[in-house]
Amino acid sequence: MLVRARTDTVPPQILILVGIASVQFGAAFANKLFSQAGPAGVVLMRLVFGSVVLMALTRPRLAGRSRRDLMAVTSFGLVLAFMNWSFYESLHRLPLGPAVTVEFIGPLAVAIAGSRKLLDVVWVALAGGGVALLALGGSQGNLRLSGLLLAALAGALWAGYILLSQRVGSSFAGLDGLALALSIGAVVIVPAGVLQGGSALLRPEVALGGLGVAVLSSLIPYSLELISLRRLSASAFGLLMSLEPAVAALAGVLVLGQRLHLRTAAAIVMVVIASAGTTIEASRSAARQPAGSPGRRAAAQGSPLG
Image 1: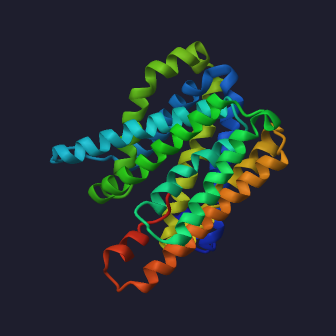
Image 2: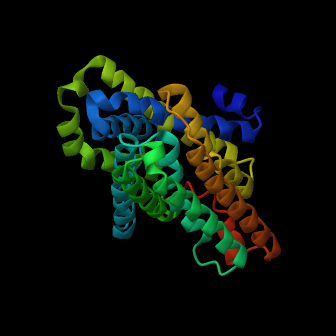
């Protein structure tokens, strides 16, 4: 209650920025554990610790749930597990900034899907140009094709995560659906996590690092987003989340000592501008529609990050 009272006095924009920094610096710290537990092992620890905390806090009930609800939350858990695994595998091969930039195409595609406006075509072209710049500049920025493909897979799964999160969010109260999905994802990733992590998962320092990643990458940002969205418009939220690739690049430089090449920086800026432009245009379109219309409700569902 005291934490809630304190955060309510902080501007929601600051809470979102703290959440963004927490996610990206959490990814940077996760990268440091790959040499000991492997990407799958780190994902397993993140999902296990995150699910244990959320299940204890929410205590969701499955009794009385329809088969459709159970299928939705199961699919959500599967997508969540493989999205994180493919993203961490891409981080094992790419610098953090480029990996997040390519992955960000997933939510950007969802935000633009179905639009026939010429301006949205411009945003698509700009974002696609940024990703192409990364791919074509692989030799300069030491970007491996396998890493780019894994980041693109994570982006596609992120798009599925967005659509499923809307379905689960409408059926389960609060964080109940997320807690269940994290638990399902943790079970699914056990074989790969154990295979890559092995006995390292039992070492206290590695487990403590996995707990830190879970706190930074899941618990802190989820909590701050929930609090801030009560006082922040969906368009403002989406605009702030457009900074994700840039913050990821900064975390890579500060935590991992990764170099930021000019071509990579230009590609990141292109995707950030495309995401921001899409958010602003969606906000304007929603404002022009009457209250209660489908388009207006869609624009109010939150950021592409789910």
